[in-house]
Image (tube, rainbow, N blue to C red; front, side, top):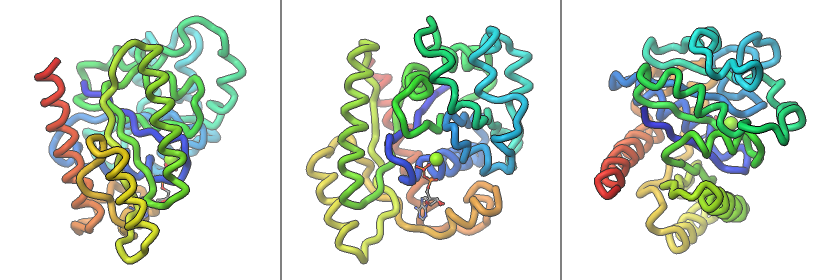
Length: 263
Ligand SMILES: Nc1ncnc2c1ncn2[C@@H]1O[C@H](COP(=O)(O)OP(=O)(O)O)[C@@H](O)[C@H]1O
Ligand SMILES: [Mg+2]
């Protein structure tokens, strides 16, 4: 299984949209995909019309009673989506209280890794939607993944958030003593506004090798898909945003092969 985290400590940058769109495209080509919601807001969970306020089984319960080692229990947590080969491990809003409950307890950073180990052969990809704070959930995501995708809005204020995210990543890599390849993905790019154009140029100067080749454009079809609770490619129209996400997926897959050859 390939495990990718989609992360940025800033909200509203396109994390959940990227998880859904990339997950859908993987599903379209027949991959078995698990989408994991680690955000207490539960946007990914709500996307598929589940209510994160009232879920009985969710990511939250995996942190208790050794549930993360229980394949049968994890099977109860995982839910279907609008594609048969793409599943969802939902979040509950109770995740917001997790920090307080488990802080200082041994092994809490590895709950997701242990859960994924239980279903390792059942999926080809797991995509992790992460919360905007560096707490126990983000630590779980970073420990479980082999690659990081960092969506960043193409506006000046987002550059600060990006700087912070890359800094966090470097700290975590140091403490875990490993390298985590990452790709910064400029999102909501509007080539008619100078703010977008200038920010993209700045990103290219600063982050060069870690930057996706093409920015994801503003695309209202991505929003339409989220209203309907389906994957963007299921709307039956190849919008501009979807096309760029396809290119991004090809590049990410290619990059994995390249880095594993070097390993
Ligand atoms: N490329 C895009 N074009 C237009 N709207 C987008 C695009 N990407 C995301 N959005 C919209 O922007 C909002 C925030 O995106 P979301 O993926 O929820 O961000 P995050 O998960 O980082 O908080 C959502 O309403 C989403 O539909
Ligand atoms: Mg989100």
